[in-house]
Image 1 (cartoon, protein in one colour):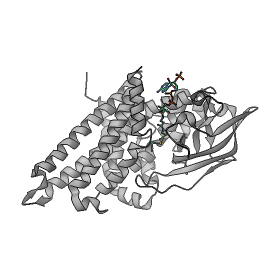
Image 2 (tube, helix red, strand yellow):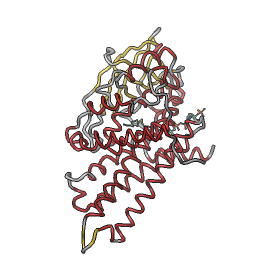
Image 3 (tube, helix red, strand yellow):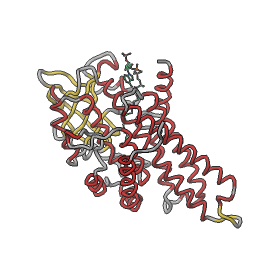
Image 4 (cartoon, helix red, strand yellow):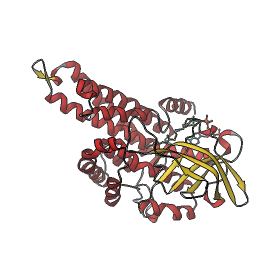
Length: 376
Ligand code: CS8
């Protein structure tokens, strides 16, 4: 067993860390207030080679694995998880195409991501996000085309995406009746709503998307008809380590801010870190951070080494989400009244952390997946 990152991974991690410190942290509070997509940061990160890491080299990407993606994602999210989410959502859409798309589909869209276009992953619907097998958007075959009707919600970057990876029902039979399509922005019958207002991660836009008789060529279907559920689950195996890294990044920031504050803020004649009840919070925060980080890296490492990681990915996502919420709660507590003020960074960390227990599979869903995997 080797816990050392290789030189290439360490350099990439350091590049992302420096970038987050210099470009993301100073702008995070304002981006949150303005609820503005971080376009300038996106452009700089793209130019630096921090995006599209998992796109294979033959399509212009870096051809790196899930571990490299989690390392960079953690650092970006230490800067601001809203920014980190906005910058990494392409890889969710890309995963389905990289692992299940035809050569023609890869040639068509992957170089566009590398050139700076955005793509959205459209699975969740107003009726729910957890029950993938129950989704209702329909795709009805009509000759060489499919006609899509239905609606999606909470679709990240949808207002800016130039194409969408859309899950839709092509047949009955729950999980066996789903298929996936690449749908271009501008296709008649496709409409994107305004960004939804939300508690945290406010600079990462999320919108409703409506399909009303939206026609796509059959050649835009990813994989075989009926394979959609498997493709979604496979995409989650790749993306859950990345989303766990969102939590690790926020968690690391909670520790960093809390430690600095506890060493300078004085009460009863000494820095509050000398009070054992405060010191204990920091000790617990740091221990759960390391545990979340190790679970996350391992889940990524397993899939990079061709091993099934469904159990490990759900364990990492569950633990990272639960422990970052606990850490953010304690960070606010350590800051006391200042933790409740928008003048200090931890109230934003607290708001930003909450959705980590909800998206990319709720904590309850992760427990279901873990329990099922234990019985395999
Ligand atoms: O529905 C499954 C599930 O995982 N649900 C959670 C979905 C989810 O994560 N939703 C979140 C929405 S997307 C999102 O949040 C993106 S937002 C962005 C985040 C970043 C932001 C900036 C479930 C509940 C686990 C299972 O569902 P069921 O309907 O009960 O299906 P099963 O009977 O378990 O499985 C049906 C068949 O599929 C096979 N399967 C299941 N999992 C896998 C994996 N790999 C391969 N195959 C899989 N992981 C399973 O074996 C069944 O096969 P059969 O041959 O039919 O028996």
